[in-house]
Length: 276
Image (tube, rainbow, N blue to C red; front, side, top):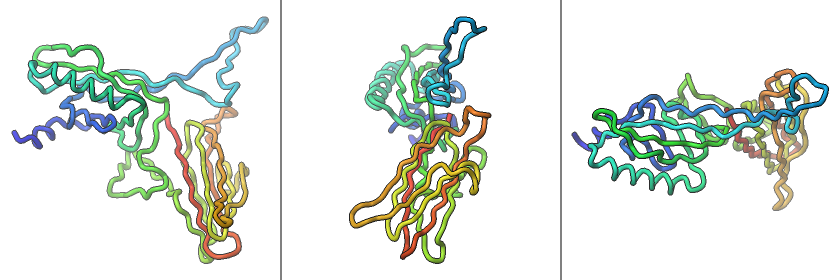
């Protein structure tokens, strides 16, 4: 069998990209079952209060929203190598993962290509033999939230779009306001973690209004964006998680931009939501 055909025969659709390495194409590992990332556990802070039944839950008292522990778990793989080559592969994969994950690597599941996780993956205990199969274990410890692989500043291509798993948020990057189109409204996708929205204005200047839940909702923040000489005005707004703790509302944010007097206005926005 040719090398290309052999590699393609390993691909299951349940494989993992770990930094620069793919579990099937680079490590020749076959998932024992579909690889999933375990959900994070919420941090719970309880306090015994004299005279009170039960305990007081202070978990959201500081932030106003839940916080979480890291995601931890393991994936099991079979190797397609004969047993006398397994130990060489074990040492090679162990070394590459150690170098790749010295700080933090980007992890993408083939079953979940829209999102990436951040954290460390390392080789578990020595490989085990089950009948004719050799099994490897990869352990992981990942940040509680996952992020969009394709930034909101880029166009989303319909040719690569998976309607079952993908989001289709509006492009946020460079927004141009002209005399013919002096205003724009962008619906920001919700976030499960606090996320920073940064807006930079240039050209003739523009006004921004950020609202809750609809285009006429409560105003969270507003102001002007412009460029004066070499100075580019910018604003940073910290958006709270989508699931609020007061009434279980889902916070959706709408950004309205309006050109001020003059020629074209340019607004550059960056925003990285995180998801559980």
